[in-house]
Amino acid sequence: MNSDDKNIKWVEEPALGLAGKSYIPLIVGGITTTLKHLVGPKMTVQTPEERHAMADPLGYRGVHRLNRDEQGSVKCVACFLCSTACPAHCIDIVAAESPWPDREKYPQSFTIDELRCIFCGMCEEACPVDAIELTSLYDLSGKSREEMIFDKQKLLSVYDQTKDAEPMRSVRERDRTEKTN
Amino acid sequence: MWILLEALIKIFVIIGGLMTAAAYLVLLERRVAAWIQDRRGPNRVGIPLTNIRIFGLGQPIADGVKFIFKEEFIPGHVNRWLYVLAPSAMFVAAIVLFAAVPFGAVDLGIEGWEPIALVVMPGLDVGIVYIFAVGSIAVYGVVLGSWASNNKYAFFGGMRSAAQLISYEIPLGLGILGVVLASGSLRLDEIVQSQAETGVWNVFTQPLGFLVFLVAAFAEAGRLPFDLAETEQELVGGYHTEYSGIKLMMFLVAEYLHMVAASFLIVLLFFGGWHFWGLTGSEPVAGIGVALLRVVVLLAKFMLVVLFFMVARWSWPRFRFDQLMSLAWKVMLPLGLVNLVGLAFWIEYGRPRFSGANEWIVMAIGGWVLLVASWLVTTLLVPAASDNRPRLGPAAADLDTKEAASP
Image (cartoon, rainbow over all chains, first blue to last red; front, side, top):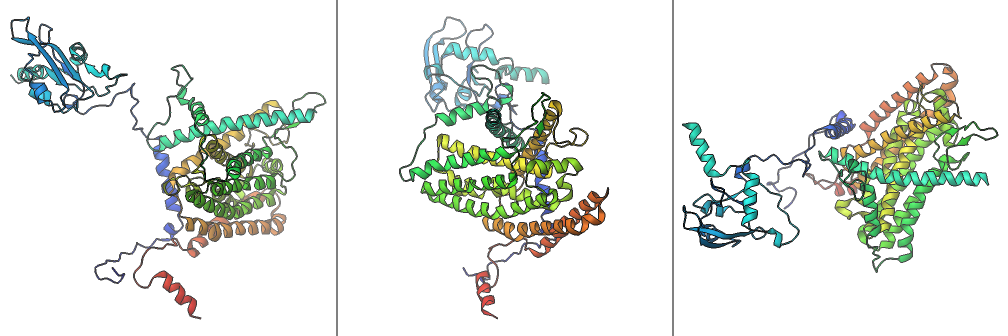
């Protein structure tokens, strides 16, 4: 393409005035910007002492938890819907006959490999009894692979840890209907 | 014997102080850079093996240990002699420079003791020339390092650095010459003394010289608006691309010491050194208390200049190389000459006429008028942008040949 091609639209920069040519507004502008930021508010969040303010902790997909029912035992009925839905095959359930009268089966063991999990939230959606949920805990770390395979005990303890800040969905819905009534 | 001991103590203090200062100025620079970018900077490292943080003051120790324990890799394609020599040359030159930086003089009040000059080389008659000469050796470090590296990035960096440093020596020298002319001495302590006695710092009477010196000092220190020699984005670090481990640290520390030296020079030449009105007095030799106060004043001024260096780093974009050169030769060199000539005229014709109390007022007014007038003239004469953008019509290169051809 030649420089005299009629498709090229030539744009000239606006001419600098005397102030612009003397560089003074640019010099002053540069240093005022930096000085403003030097004393301005800082964006860094001092993790772990401070935590990020999450817009919606209930919508966040972090570490899993296994919810408890009113008696304090695990809510899960070992229906395998979550492990079937899981695209990463990270949920392993061993079912056994339930010792409680309200259901037929219960999970004898329930393990989630947090290293395989992709945190898609499909287990939460698949669960018919609101037993498995994703919390807003995001700083998941461990010193070995074995440590990152969460068993039933660990998942229940995550529930105990987060139940006050993030009540399970059934409780939230109950509260909401009570409020509207 | 005693002189030797005295000199050894001074050398020990200066080198120890400089190394510590360089380490902690790097930390300060990182913190300031972070603050300007709305971050917080390194604030975690504290006392080793404890959880005490003290604002990240342990960071320089961690940095130093990391540098020392890094693998010191010498590539096979380098010229080994020059490759090893370069960082040492630059480092030594950067440290030796501080032998002539005066912190004042102290009279300990002990019977039979001479007053002690707080400088490693007291009574050095060529003080400023010495600093100027030793400071220029830095170019050798850069050029040797880049040449020995046998690497094109390093070579470009070295070429740029050589051209830049040599060009800016001239405005730097012109800025210094104005001060030397005004105080009538090449000794740094006498230059400070002359400012202290009158109470009029050179920056008030020679703003133009100060401006020229400041810009040239930025360029000599290779600080950001002028850090063409090591542009990370285009030259991968420039002349120290091939260096690692402690040799790289020596390069970096030497560069930092150049900034420290430039800051000290700015304070000594233009901001009255250890002098502050109504605080330090103006006699050449002071008692212990006042001498300590003078050192504190000098260091406080120095810190302010260093902070300006650090803030300036993030304030203005880097120059293009041709702009850098045209700034040196087309702007700074004439401005420096104008300052020098104006000052010479003042000393020859103005000072005898206005001698008395209002001598300094007239001189300061003259200096500022000179600054504004010459800045204005430069603005009108020098094109704002010497650029190579595409334009409509015949290319600039064609125009040049046509103009050259026409009589």
